[in-house]
Image (cartoon, rainbow over all chains, first blue to last red; front, top):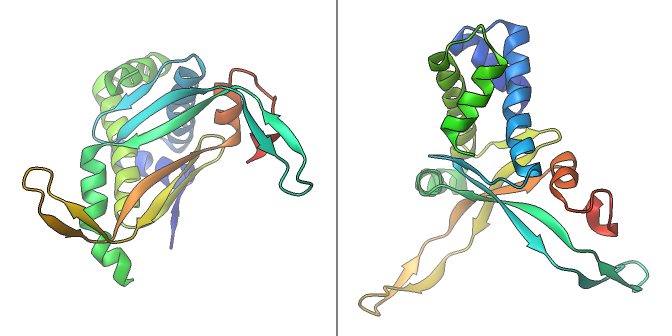
Length: 102
Length: 102
């Protein structure tokens, strides 16, 4: 199965929006950088039709080194979660049958 | 941050593009990402994260209104895993914690 990467996204911007190759590549980088920096500054990101990126704060919890069995605390941290939009979930669900066959 | 704010931030970075072109660019990227998942292809953006599909096995559900049992068929749901740079920048305590590599 193929994988979508920044290179393919830049090609699409070149073909469909008429940016030159350098602009297209930069814009793809900037697109993800704007989302990253919004999240880094504590802002959630809502992309209607696609999904929401939200932040969750987790308090310290006990963990274990799986190799040695030694107990080590997992420090408090902030993590990103993604929730696909109803639209995207419905589209993926609709095509699940075809994906299961392949 | 919403999609229109993202468009506005990006337009400010590209004075050579009008807002309508930037709207088109953002739509093109998001549509390609949705389409990729719908077709079963993963998305991998270095430093940001990866999107894929998780399988949900069939289960017995219940119609909450009637209480009637219904078979919910197996399906796929979209899934996101944050990449290292995004994880580190979002975390309150960057570079801390043994689990940051997971």
